[in-house]
Image (cartoon, rainbow, N blue to C red):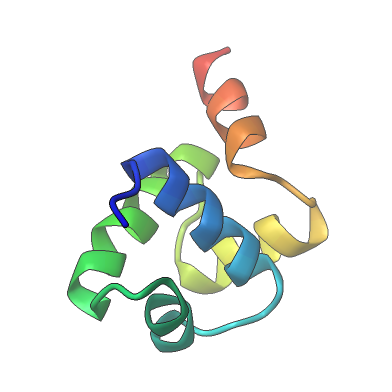
Length: 75
């Protein structure tokens, strides 16, 4: 099933905020790790994360959804 880039990013955010690591997220979404990585890089850029650990912290502790991150970036 084809999904939009934004749908994939939303799913990635949900799984990352649940504590799954990159390989598990990619596998659960049925995409390769190489496909996953650019999506993660874009998510990190949008939320202002300095690294993967910081991204996980922001997504979990601040309970930021992908849509909220986009809204904050556009302000």
